[in-house]
Image (cartoon, rainbow, N blue to C red; front, side):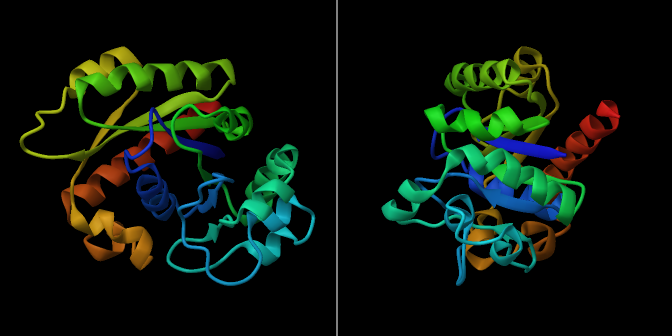
Length: 225
């Protein structure tokens, strides 16, 4: 199943959640933000090269604690990439590298976020634990619905004791399970260190929250079948 991880706006920790969700699902994580990639790139070809027809998918996927299909960060690479090929690439990753593919979407509601949402089987939203973030989350959910990517779960990300996150409000309005992910520095470091919180601190509240979100994705998969 292809799961698009989207955010109502930028700066909510979407990439970090996508990376850790990939670890929890034992999935390949694809950085589909062709203009502002965040996942570690390393050496070798990347998604830009694959979409430009200059490399095969198998060459671009990196192993590690989380398998990644990173994206390049150059303007030239972004211009050369044919976004129309993204759907075929994601389906190929799904068919050849396991049951689940987690797609880190472009931030917010930029026009290019619709491409991975259109091919995704389900969507997970990452939102700020503030009431004002609910409107952005609703807009993103509606876009996902229009593109037939049902909402499988929501991560209220970077919560603190002072937030008193309105979990029930988000659950009622968005109509999806809520995972409350605390502001844990081990989560914040996980992408750069390439060490998912499930490995760094498996007994932590943050790891449990990511597992809860993963369980919602699995339940969505079972419902589809």
